[in-house]
Amino acid sequence: MGSGSWSTDVYDAAARYRAAGGTGAFAYSDRVTSSAPRASWAAHPSLDPKGIGVRESRDSDEHPTSLAIAVLFDVTGSMRTVPRVLQTKLPELFGLLLRKGYTEHPQILFGAVGDATCDRVPLQLGQFESDNRMDDDLGNILLEGGGGGQMTESYELAMYAMARHTSIDCHGKRGRRGYLFLIGDELPYGKVKAREVRAVLGDDLAEDIPVTRIVAELRRKFDVYFILPAGSSYVGNTAILATWRRLLGQNVIELDDLDAVCETIALTIGLGEEAIDLAEGLADLADLGTTATATSAVGKALAALDRDRAAAAVTDTPLIDGTGAGGTTRL
Image 1 (cartoon, rainbow, N blue to C red):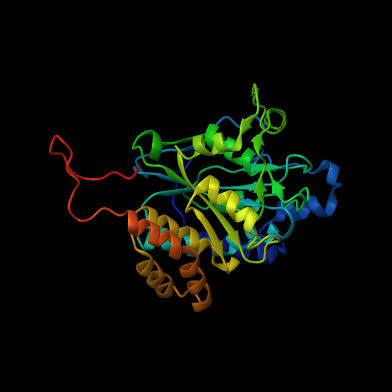
Image 2: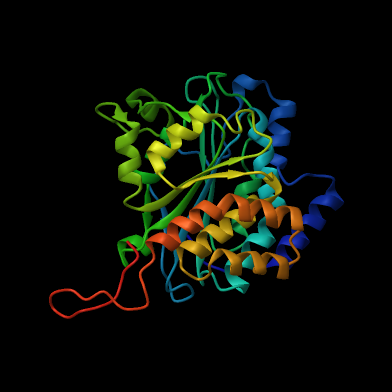
């Protein structure tokens, strides 16, 4: 996967076609949830993780330095609005990543997280794509809206899938981690349960895996971020924030404006790739016509992350090791 290139013209044409036909951007979810009993709901075949194999982000002549980016969002309760916001803001995301030069060859995977203890569709995973097929994947997501009501969802199951069922050339060939964004407002369960892995993914897992261990495994391949947006059920909950910060450290982002989620993702990548500092990123938002409210929300959300990166930055003088070699590498 990952061939082709993103086109805003193609995106706009698809939106006009849907509008003319009276269908929404999430036609699969709209059709399933309105016409079939809940007991029969299932993931779209393109997103079904059962027997998934691997989701691949590959280099090619067209994209010689691919960068794997995964965006997984909670679709339970109030969080069901997130994918709709993402779908409308895809042009802004690519405008920043490509036109502003944050990365040359992004390949983006979209997925959704529910609750494996009670939902019909607790996990959905698309492919890493460079072109408008990612819009198709996003539109095929089932917005189940379930959840268990226990302030927990199956984020750990999603992290297991991304740790063990992805193969990304940015890491395998160049030793550079990809980016994984989890967008939610609840806690992960304390362990990846073998029975849920067998039921949802089909893996014959011998024993449960503590969430701390799967997070450590995942972070060898991806820089992992948790975004908690405004409007969600548990926004500002100190227990949730503390737990995610124990798991991910500085990479926990509180976002005051859900409409700014794509811009937040793009600037986080720009910062991570050292293509910009935060002030430059906010100037880029203004240049692309982002509202002052959204720009302010992004600045507030990423201020701590920017400070931490600046504090850890290496000076202009290269580090010298015992052999006289210099330079730094993003691990």
